[in-house]
Length: 468
Ligand SMILES: *Cc1c(COP(=O)(O)O)cnc(C)c1O
Image (cartoon, rainbow, N blue to C red; front, side, top):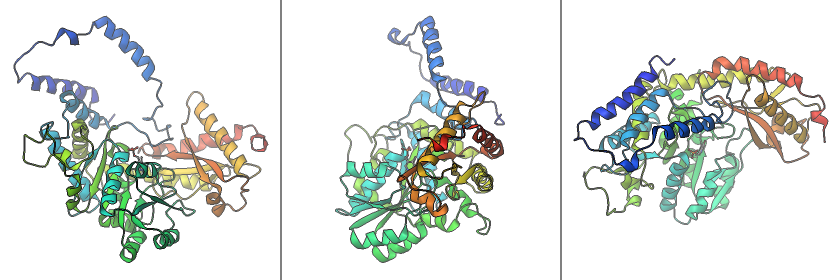
């Protein structure tokens, strides 16, 4: 299916490790570690029954949350390294996977145009952001951290952990940080750092990084970019600006940000456990200064634990990413860029179908690969739209024999009203449908999904939108 035999490489992953083990003297596995083959079979059987209770993230008809499986090549890399289980905290824990991590981190830094960098992989985007916000606090002590109302919920939470005051900046009707509102808050509040989201988790909106960087000249503050989801789309910013699928001025501005976060476990084909934080100024390494009585002995080179908040981290995550990037280089014209291009095109094509349909309305024009939309309802109020949305969501997921998986998103009604003034705001929020088209196969499935959703819409009981 993927041009190589996954089964064969899984078998080789086992062989490679036993070959490596055979280079050391033989020993006996302690009986306390033995398992009875029948017990294993029974346990495995019930395990298999349970694990099937998982949504089919791999399938193009799963077009819901920001979820997909890793590329099989990443699994092979992970499987080999996982059996050895290096720990990328220190070179004592994994000299080679530590080196691989430094290489892939340098590639991610180059992707956004950093000349110099300090950074490392993390177990998630949340931890990567926590680290960037912690450094931001150290660089601007006593000042607050600002982020938009559409930014990821973990920023407020992590500022709580860090005991830093926060400023929420309203989003505009396209879900982007409102520049005017930011300016007003820069004047009235003591803001040390602005978190700019490139690709909000809800709508995939792009905060105006270029405009915010201009403001930095004027007001002086740090800029951290949360590109956990959207960061890899910078690969498409190298295209001819006339035809580029993403706004080049925004992604090309990334090189001027003080720090940024990108999650290879979102759009980088990796299994969970792989975020990345990068700083433009390597001198921030001074804030990490600590000693460890246990580690950092085998080498005088940089141990990743010396520049990261976490201690143990899977060396297998670095190995998997390293192997993946040999096959899917960070290029716009091929490799990972070709994957993202399909996703972006899928979103554009579906947006066009929705815009011209009678059954559905587009919330905003998609900026990356998330499409948000809602069904037509006879009485156009926030509560009726929400009810119809929920009915569509349920009937898509209950469809037999092949369900379609979508997700839901709550938004301020005012955002929809800016495009559809006739919507009655009988409450402040409205629930809409949301689809993350993060698999390249989604492109071919967009017409199928759209047509099936239109047919389901026709089948909805006519009075749903009038129910009380
Ligand atoms: C997913 C996401 C996060 C959180 O990352 P995790 O890897 O899930 O911890 C933070 N910010 C944005 C914009 C995200 O999309």
